[in-house]
Each structure stands twice: as structure tokens, then as C-alpha cells.
Amino acid sequence: MSKLISLTGIKPTGTPHLGNYLGAIRPALELRKKYDTVYFIADYHALTTVHNREEMRNNTYKVAATWLALGLNPEEGLFYKQSDIPEIFELSWLLSCFTPKGFMNRAHAYKDKVAKNQAAGADPDDGVNMGLYGYPCLMDADILMFKSNVVPVGKDQKQHVEFSRDIAERFNKHYGKNIFTLPEPVIQAETDIIPGLDGRKMSKSYGNTIEIFLEPKELKAKIGKIVTNSQQIEEPKDPEKCHVFALYKLFASEEQAAALAARYLAGGMGWGHAKEALRELLEEHLAKPREKYNALLADTTQIDKILAYGAEQARAIAKPFMQEIRDTVGIAAN
Ligand code: TRP
Image (tube, rainbow, N blue to C red; front, side, top):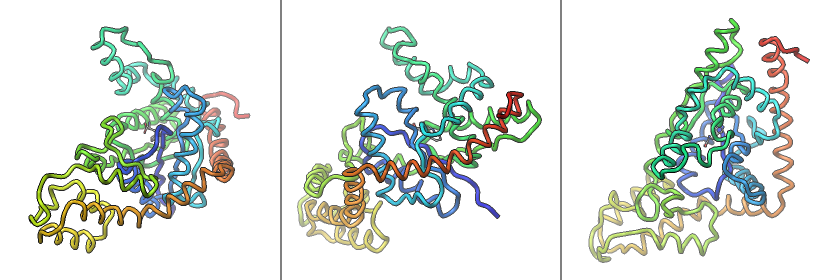
């Protein structure tokens, strides 16, 4: 029996941090055990907001290097760049012709932007380009082109996947043919609980992140900034109330976590010791990926090759499927 397909879209924005790794990248890579996987870089989605050439190029390489360094195997499943698959854009247009405009009005990224504009007394559509407005239609094409059964996403993207399902269903019904597979959003719950330096959710907007590939010295300095209380060395400490321990636990084996918890409870361990334990554990997990990440970015031809290979494989699926879809709506297949 062939496995179900899981599809993950990665928007190339910014430098990824441990919150991204633990909340999104690591669980997405775990999916390989259960599903046939599709991973792609959603660069044309990023273009709705990133209008700087260097930033776009660098972010795309950085995000590709990140996933490859953390274990994405391009031989296993698909890994490509959205912009390399022109059929996705053709499908996006076609689907937009079946998408009620009201859906886009309700799409939450757009709605948030309008609400912000209104609060600021600006024109409701200030700073909204058509790409941003139609963002969900491009996502529909991403998802439906590869017959995705499940789409792991953060809470904020759930609505978009539900739109895809709705539109796939309408299209299938209208033409009396099961062309599109109905996708299911799978919500990644863990994302909320990864603490940043100040204990709030790790997020770029709070400025409390620890980037994944910091050099050893910078990593040590960042860990030093994790907020702790003013308990003295000799006092016993509650591991469950400590952000250092919370991060440690997310990387540690059960035995490692239990051993450090015991040191907290026993007293005689200062915050510096706890931070050192975290640093060692992070080095253990991230030193190799960091090496790989740096090597991939030092010579990007390898990434280019991997993405070209992925594009070829993805197009071998997208091209005939697009023909079938064109034929279904009465537009010549060739
Ligand atoms: N919009 C997603 C995000 O901001 C990225 C994305 C683009 C995506 N296309 C997708 C996610 C298709 C899942 C499926 O993170």
C-alpha cells in the first residue's frame, strides 16, 4: 500500500531559530516515518512582502541549507523551490477562477492587515498588493498539485488549508470527477511552548530568539542571556519553573532530563552550571548541522543542484497532472 502524502511549505523569511526548529522543522522531518513527504520553498509567497533582491536570494539559500543541514534527505521524497514549477502558477490562476472573492476577504492575513490599517486611520487596503490578497490561491495550487493528504501547519495557516479543501471539493463536484485530493490540515501544537530568552514564546517579533546555527561563542553568549531568578547556588531549584531547563528538555533524552532535574532539586547548582549543561547539549545536537550549514552556504552550487534535481522530479508529476486539469475544464490538453 502506498503511503499518504504530507506536504510542507517553507516561506524563506529571516534566519531560523530554535523555535522554528523545535516547533516546525523537527516535527516536519519526523513525518518521513509515516508519510511520503513533499517539502518546498515558497519563494513566490515570500515575494508578497520581500522586495529586496539580495534578501530574497540569501533567504532562499539559507532556508534550503537549514533544512538540508538538519536532516532533510533530497533523495527521499520531494524537495524543490516553488518558483521552479511553472505549473503551480498555472494551477493557481485556474483555481482562482473557482474561488469566491469573499474567501480572500476573510483570509486572516489580509483581514489582519486591514484591521491594522483601520486602527491606524489609513486606507483599509494600504500596503496590500494583489499577491498578498490572493496568497491563499497560490497555497491552494501548492497543496492540490501534489495530491497532498495532510498539510502540517501552524494555527495561523489552518484556514488556508481549509480553503484548499473547500475549493477542491467544489471543483470535483462541479466537473463530476475526483480530480483533486482533499487535504487535511494537521496542527503543530508544540509551537506555543518553546520559550525564548525571556520566557515568552520564542519569536522574532519579541527579539528573544536563539538562532540555530550560531557559532559556539555566540551561542554561549545567547544562552547567558536566558532570564533566571535570583536564587543562590546552594538553594534547591524547581526545574519546571526554569526556561533553561525547558529548552534543555526539548533536546535531552529522558535520562538526561531526569539527571539535570535531580541536580536542580538537590541544591548546590548555580544558574551558570545549568546554562553550561544546556550549552553542551545544544553543541552536541547542533555542531554537525552547523558545519554542514556553513559548508552548503560557502558553495551554493550544491544547493542549486539539489533544487534542480527536485524541480525535475516535481515537474514530472505536475506537468501531466496539469494537462489532465486543463482537459477537465475544456482547455486543450496540449
Ligand atoms: N503560507 C505558509 C507560511 O507562511 C507557507 C506555505 C506556502 C505553505 N504554501 C504552502 C504551507 C502550502 C503549507 C502548504 O508558513
